[in-house]
Image 1: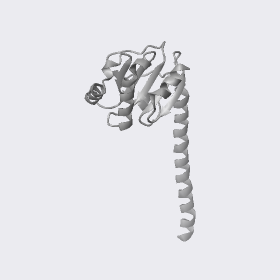
Image 2: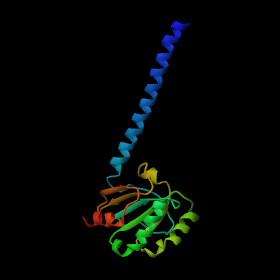
Image 3: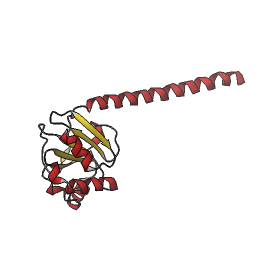
Length: 164
């Protein structure tokens, strides 16, 4: 019996390690594919609570957010504060929260007063990449990724990327 256990236990351990290694490699490959795909604006479908559309001829900022996140709330306040300096681009704020929460967030932070900003409802990670909140992607007018910011970001940093 001990002889069988000496054989079975190492085989089981090796099998478990192999399965876990395979899963890690799969996930890494999927992330790499998504990252490469993000070099240009992905084709996506989100529900626009503002009923606007994407203009592919100007720089675009995508912000993955959650209305309860204090860093996202800061970003919204800064977007409103610097709205006049951001009028040369389009901004899409995306969350998977219910429309009612998004409408409340939009109202609380006066986002309706930013004519080039749209709030979208849907799964960000389905089209983009596993991300932090907030997660900001800036694309140029041709739809090429210029910069990605993870976490709270000062508007001045966004403006610097848009100026290039």
